[in-house]
Each structure stands twice: as structure tokens, then as C-alpha cells.
Image 1 (cartoon, rainbow, N blue to C red):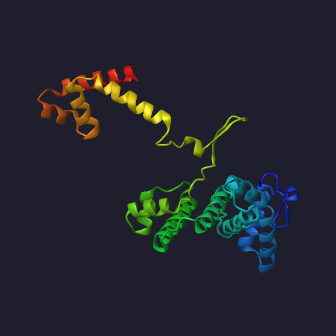
Image 2: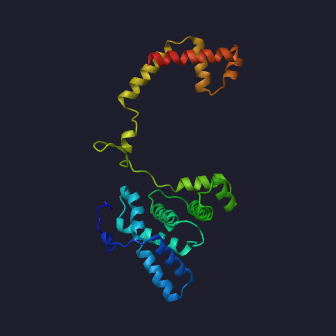
Length: 260
């Protein structure tokens, strides 16, 4: 686990320095306006002073089975990008800008090494969308909508949604969903089995409940829930009013609920 790992990539995490907000501002100003030597020294100090930030971010991905050293190195790349692109004139804390950049870099790494293969064109579209998202987030201090990203890329919003969904990494069956400190529930525990005894017992109970309905009630439920028709369409088909359809539907559902 990353939490208990003291040394990552040769760095003793227990001795990582912490910079004050004022010092960060000073260093960022030097990085923008200083001489080459001053900028290099300030950048090195800024990187070292924010490694704890990288560590805190990669802890979010600790349950994915990835090598902590690899994630830490990727997170550092995101940190350096954040330092190089941060706008000192914006009235925001560096961490507010840096955390999404680090997360984005780690997610890109995980998607590149995802076992589920995605076409290069779709992956390129997704990465362009992510870059636009990061740019608009930094510009407006809030996440953009899909429509805004699509407008920026000049492509249909459906293409943006499909591309982003395609590169989402799969969830492990052993990913914890809930824990009360003793028993942990995993994704696997939430999956049903077609052969599960409770499933076919419920199926039998449902059939018995439906059998107790009148022919008209069965017809209404069939048209409403299996053929997807509206109450008005059902009323026209069986020759009664929409209000009668509504009343009969509610009565039938109450009967089924009572039987179950």
C-alpha cells in the first residue's frame, strides 16, 4: 500500500518539505520572471516542495494494483506541467490548479496501459477533449460542460461522450464498495447470478401474482410495460378512458405488490 510506503522512487516521503502559500507565490514569480539560473533553482524547489501533493493524489489510485513508484513518477510529470502552466495572475491556490493536472496525468497513464484496447482515433479524440477540459477549467475556474468541450473541438457532443467513455478504465471486481470497519462489500458482491436461487424464486412469485389479475389488468400491464405504450394509447386500443386505464393499472400493481 502507498500509505505505508516510506520510500518511493528513492525519495523518503517522511522527510518531504512543505512550502507555505507565500513561498509558492514567490517561487512561481521567479519561475516566470527570473534569470535562467534563478528559474531553474526556483522550479526545483517548487517541485520538491509539492511532492507531498503528488503523494496525496496517487493515494486515490492505491487500490488499482499499480506500482506506487510508477504512479509517483507519472504524478510528478503532472506536477511539472502544472508548475509550467500556472498563471500567477489568477487568484487561485496552486494546489487548486495542480491537483486536477496531476490526476489527469495519472488517468492518462492508466488509460494508455489499459487492457481494453481502444482505437487510436477515438483515444486521440478523448485526449483532445481532456486537454480542452483542463484548459477551460483553468480559464474559468470550473469544469466545462460537454457542449462547451464539443464546441471548442468543433465536433458533435455525442463524439465527445463516446470517446471519453471508451477510455474509462474498467473497475476491478475486488474494488471495495462499502466498509463498516469489519466486513467489506466488493463490486463482486453486488453482481447477480442468473442461476441464483433467489432469482428463480422471485420469478415464480411474480408469475403467481400476475396470474391472480383479471384479463383486462393483464392486458393493460402488458401494453404499458412490455410494449411501452402510453396510458392514452392503451385506452384507445382497448376502448376505455385514460382515467380508467390509470385506475386499473394502479390496482393491478397494488395486487402484485401485495402478493409479493
